[in-house]
Length: 266
Ligand code: FES
Image 1: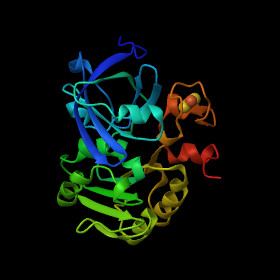
Image 2: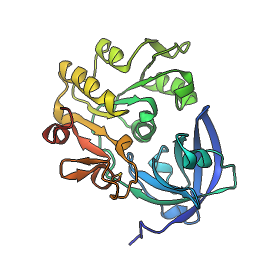
Image 3: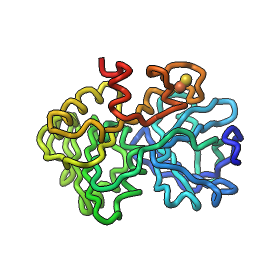
Image 4: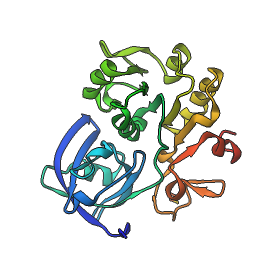
């Protein structure tokens, strides 16, 4: 059985600049052909002397035998160092960890606030070509400088339904007005029997879920990734505790009903 605590070097084979503070590192392990993950899982990523932190995987799980991607926003010394890596450099990784999103039969609604769209992109990639699955994608962020995967958005719009909104500006041909993600959800017809996956800052969940319930979405179909709650990512800091569970060890994805039961929305 694979030892998830073993640190492995991963070679940077490509760096994609997503915005001024966010890069996608496309990585390859020595034994990449043995690597597998589920959409919504994360890796522990480190650089010797700088520490280690949890980062969601952002690539298509179907490509996992060839490569995988981590999309990293600079928020401190370690992420700054990771985002300074160039092609050929090494990052040190462990994992994958976490439970990931449940399987989808039928339609899918993806709601990503800020860099919350990062783990949801793996979900989109996984289901974008599935027969009989229509996908609605909702993305909200502050401005173009905080938007991720901008180059991919036209293809999402062409193939499925893209709803993008930014607080400070509009993106010609792509965004639907200016404001918050909840404004968009209020306006749009949401697929009724779809699974709904949400990821974003803590403050967003309460308002998004409220709108979904007003629209008549079955609470049993709503899942939230609380990856933003993670700090150490290894069950030590207790920062991520929700009721009897830890986001880093038991999540990061939880059904809405579990979160209600343990007082997350109070
Ligand atoms: S992130 Fe530290 S205990 Fe979960």
